[in-house]
Length: 71
Image (cartoon, rainbow, N blue to C red):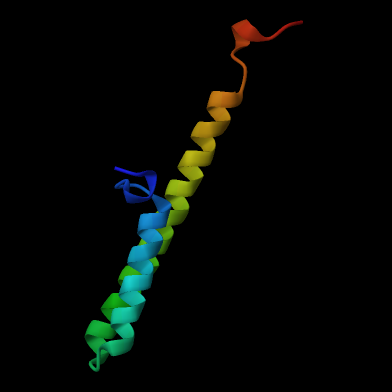
C-alpha cells in the first residue's frame, strides 16, 4: 500500500473532499447537496488534523533527547 492510500493520509482525505464536492454539483435536491458539502468540510478538517499530527510526529523524531544534548 502506498502512502497516498493510507487510511489516515491527508491526500486521501482531500480526494474524498473533491469527490463529495463533485457529487454535490450533480445532485438536484438541496438536502443531499448540503449533506455532501458538510461531508467535504469534515474531510477537509480531518486532512488538516492529520497533517498537523504528522508534522508534530516528525518534529518529535528530529528533536534530540535530553540524554543526547551536549552542554
